[in-house]
Image (cartoon, rainbow, N blue to C red; front, side, top):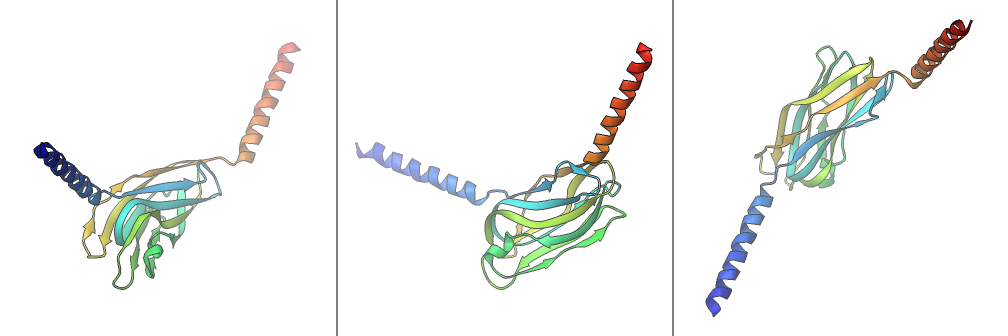
Length: 190
């Protein structure tokens, strides 16, 4: 009778080991949040580069690609996620508004310490919405390292920014259409 109980304990331990190994190999996700969405021409657009499911993140690097006919990059600032683990050094990256890229934005912890674990914002990039249209936001040159200087392979999720006319432009357009409709109706009854 003790044999089935021992088998159940061994199977439970094996299942726990498989779950523990599977969770240790979780893949972090790097995604983008855009605000405001959609944006009006002339608005400042904030793009947060967000990581979720990070385990022992010590350093990161990325380049962000965008449509320069719709957006113009201005600045990037460090997000709050990596500093939760200690003192950091941040590189805002190089803006190229001709080709549509913010190249090699990077952050690292300083000293011998474990990396950050959890979810949060790595960096915030600011753009000016300059023309009506849509800009896909995509990643290039992505590198994540843990505290042992080993690479971490993330899942990447691109984003989109839509730029629309200002609200006052829509109001003027609507009033113009109403005026044309009224003029047409007056001519039809005359």
